[in-house]
Structure formats: C-alpha cells, structure tokens
Image 1: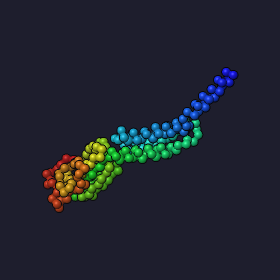
Image 2: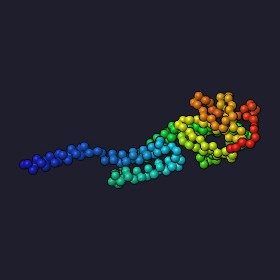
Image 3: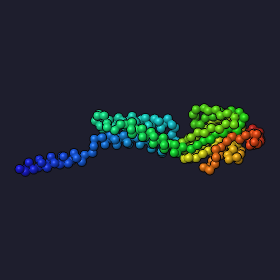
Image 4: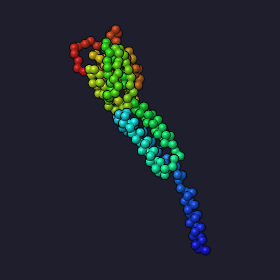
Length: 210
C-alpha cells in the first residue's frame, strides 16, 4: 500500500515537472536573440569600425548562432525562423547607425574640378562651384583630395562643412567666411560654395600649404 502511494506521488511530481518545464522552442529563441544583439551592440559601442567590419560581424553572428540554435533544438527545425531575429537585428543596427550619424558637407569654391575621397572610400569628383553631402558615422575621419589631407571628427548628429580648392571659403546663410572647416549649428542653413562674382572669395596671398 505504501509503495503504491509513493509511486503515485512520483508520477504526480513528474507530471508537475513537465507542466512547469519551459517550452522546447524557448532555448533556441534565446540563442538567436543573443546572436542578433551582437551586431546592434557593435554598431552602438564601436561606431569607429569600418562598414565591412560591421557587415562581417553581422554575417558571422547570423551563421554561428543559427547553427547553435539548431544544435540546442536537437537537429529539429526550430519553430523560430532565424531570419526573423536577424532581420530585426539588421534593421535595429541600421537605425542605431543612422541615429548616431553626422553630416559632412564638402564645397568647392575653386574654378577647377576637385577629386576627393573620405576614409579611403570611393573617389568622387566635385565640379567647380559644386557641393556634396555625406552621412558619416560618429568618430574620426580623413578626407583626401589632390592637394589636401584633412582629419576631422564627427559627433552624434553633428554637421560639418569642409572647403576644398586653392582658396578656402564657405558661405552659410548669406555670410561668407574664409575658412576651410566650419561646424554648423542646428539653426544654420546648408553651406554653399563661395562665388567670385559675389566677391565672396578672399584675395590670394601667394602659395598656401595644403
């Protein structure tokens, strides 16, 4: 009689344990969530990394943690699609990057076309009297042109204007300044290249060092 009661309690305890056990898809979901958080944290805390490093981190996390999720799911197809987790991860990483990005304006007040690039990226051409804008991650950067090397740093949401050419001049809100670099407040308008017909360009004083 006592043995029958002990056996009955054992069965009831086993059933209660099964009822309290987490669903089998929970562990694979936690593994995928941990992997999906890695690219977002990388963009958030290491914005100075080049773009290819962030892309490599994302792909490595997606492959490794998808494999781990399948392992903990005991080789059965997990009920949580890894594409769902890492699709959200890519979106969150992109939003984090864009939220921290700053704007770089490049103006060319010279009478000749200028070739330039930022951080060793794609070489671009800026026609005489032209301007261009790039959204860059916060952190240090380097701009190279045919005659200049400019190192600068952008903070979160900051706007910076750089002037290229033999005579540095930036025009903002109708005011021309003989400066090669200008940090723009939120109240300022978009920078423009100075124009010689308006008398914006400062007079030449001889050869200038880049």
